[in-house]
Amino acid sequence: MKKLPNTPVPERCEVPNLRYLISNDCFIVCQPLASDGFIEFCKKRNVAASREQLERYEKLGLFYPIARVKYFYFKTKVERGNGG
Image (cartoon, rainbow, N blue to C red):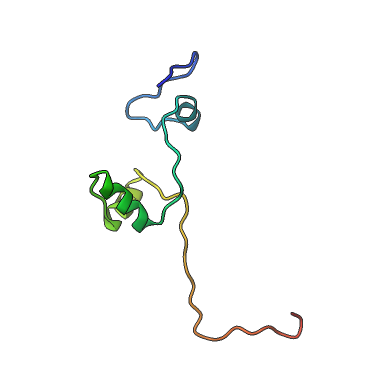
């Protein structure tokens, strides 16, 4: 990692700020994955992961999804009215 002048180093128990992470190349860029894809990504790297573990990490505030998609299922057919 490169060290930039005047870049504050975060405390060990403190969550590093985004500016520090970006300026010190502390991340890799991957395409967003669904939870099953992320679990498979972890398994290929010998990191144990399950859907339950990911949900627990989120509840503990350790790890968050970048987005959550909720699907809605309609039981009745939706039709357009006279206005469109």
